[in-house]
Picture 1 (cartoon, rainbow, N blue to C red):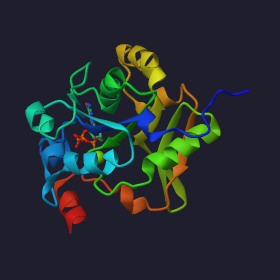
Picture 2: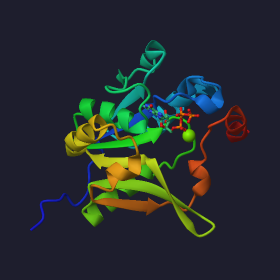
Picture 3: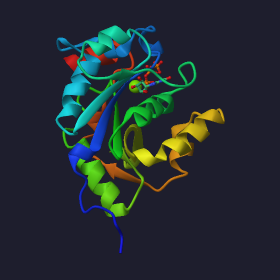
Length: 203
Ligand SMILES: Nc1nc2c(ncn2[C@@H]2O[C@H](COP(=O)(O)OP(=O)(O)OP(=O)(O)O)[C@@H](O)[C@H]2O)c(=O)[nH]1
Ligand SMILES: [Mg+2]
């Protein structure tokens, strides 16, 4: 018989806000610190995620003191020089003290409030190691890979992958048992890559 839990307890999940990018399409600013309806984007993401999990962390590579003032542990990428979101995942996996980690980017202020619950249910139902969000646009399923629930035990595999100089998310996730959850509200995944997109999301 399988030893899989029937349901994942939110206390067994650590949420990681990814704020370690270059923000190049926003002029190189530290995106997580940009204002969204009176709060820094990373704080907005943190508050939304905190309701869904037992523990939270932030991954950032600049202005660490500003992120620390948000009141949760902050960890920079342990590898590379802006090596991509997987380097942020590794920061989370190294510091996570729970069997599951879930990641969200800092620049998607309206991500679903049932994100983690749905990813966790799918992970259990499918016996997967990784569950990623997806949306459907014009009949095409679009994976949203930075919205990802994964088993903490995958850390060693990610270390090996990153040390081999790889950075692409899909090539790493494809090495593991993956499932996706299609969310009906594609607009909830709208992200602010430019100043204009951020303004539109605030309107
Ligand atoms: N830790 C870490 N996170 C990253 C890195 N690059 C991107 N991310 C994160 O991945 C998520 C999605 O990335 P993008 O929307 O492309 O953000 P970005 O890289 O800051 O912006 P651009 O430079 O304009 O692409 C965001 O939450 C980023 O913070 C990186 O090198 N390290
Ligand atoms: Mg983005």
